[in-house]
Length: 99
Image 1 (cartoon, rainbow, N blue to C red):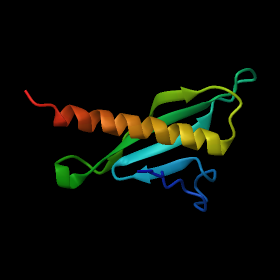
Image 2: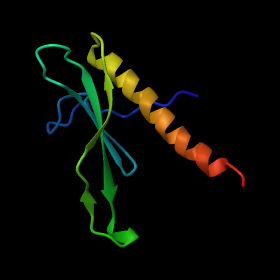
Image 3: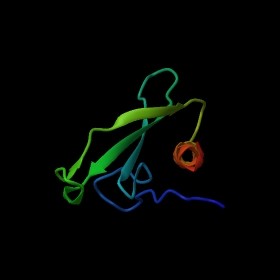
């Protein structure tokens, strides 16, 4: 099964293809902006909700992965997709373990 991250393409708040919301997770894909080794870095923010007993908020992003090489945006998105897939399936695998 293939999972596709819904990267925002037409939202004027974001550079096309660099931000996506999936449930309570927001992904940001940014260049490191270094003169040498300009890489893509993936950040994750968590959205909290009043219905869960805490204030509605989007928590500060945390860098979770960096993708080296001479990648274009589409390739960076593909790497981010693979990272998120592994991250989420890793969590689900922990839930599936029996004592």
